[in-house]
Image 1 (cartoon, rainbow, N blue to C red):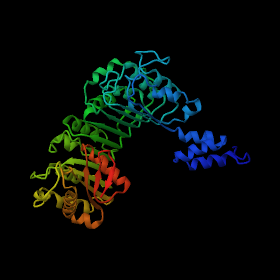
Image 2 (image 1 turned 30 degrees about the horizontal axis):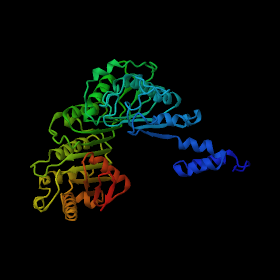
Image 3 (image 1 turned 90 degrees about the vertical axis):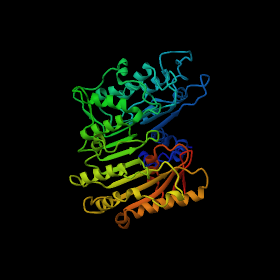
Image 4 (image 1 turned 135 degrees about the horizontal axis):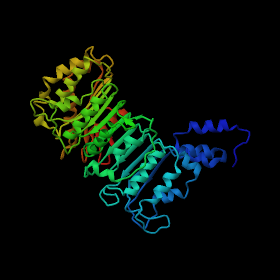
Length: 463
């Protein structure tokens, strides 16, 4: 079937442009008419995710299968590339199918064909590196790093690899605007070991780039620390001076120290701090100097998760938040959003009801008055999530306890409640309770109200 030739291409392009977010409709359009094909492919191939399975050496390399259909036109359409559950050791073969120790040749071919990439995401499968422990071969690291330079990647996400040469980003990646680096396997090497990887520099001497967004966790702090140190060198071509968003997972002392240094360097521009906590490390000294320095002095959005011990006489984490807000109210009044997640680490019951939130009796009135007063005229919302562990049994009864905890906390902040800015929701993460802040933010984005249950698959079950 051919599309009527009298229809101008501007019209057919406008039709496809209206369908840019509907992949099913775009796929149908690409089959209806040759006139629709090229424009449909522009959007269909803009975001490519290649998922690696665990079927072993006998299965074709996933990238090899993709290369069989990739044309120069389609390669130029790719702007966002994701390698999901990557396993180098399973695909370490050359293009003719024989064994090779020269790294992943198929990825090298793919990287040479793509044009300008807006984002690149590499998520290594657990224990899926070249040596089965999250490490990548030196040849593959060089190939990936060279691709990041050549395609001018602006958003880079690296997960589950322990030896990616992050320290070189300061010298060569001036187009980088967003960096997310996580090590689920833990930090197993020092930054200095990365020096063995020799990577050519492509950056022009006069080019200076700046990161807008940075995300890291406890396990990757040594890598980000190395990058931070290199950014201080005179030959660095990348700076944190204009950082607007900082996202952190974990409160280990080394993490807190690095956050404090970054906040000190970016205090004028830093607008958003997202700070989640890792369930495996619950103790944090919120009275320390580093924690005090880690509070941004000029925030627009604060999204924070804390482990909350209701049996303590003083909630030091909430006092840290209150003291930080009191300091910023004297110099900055930009705060628009505050999100707080409090994890109890237990399931509430009748035994917890009598002194529910009594540890907040001193903190709550000062917090309520500060955020309800004229100090923060732009404040739109204060969203609180009470994160409780799932009960061993009696699910329906536990839900009533969760709702009671949320209501009792809401009553602690009457001025914020009456202003309509306060919302308090309970949340229960079934399975391993990690990253509660991320689930709270997802619930807010979806507009979920009331109680929230997150099942073992990470999906929401709304009460």
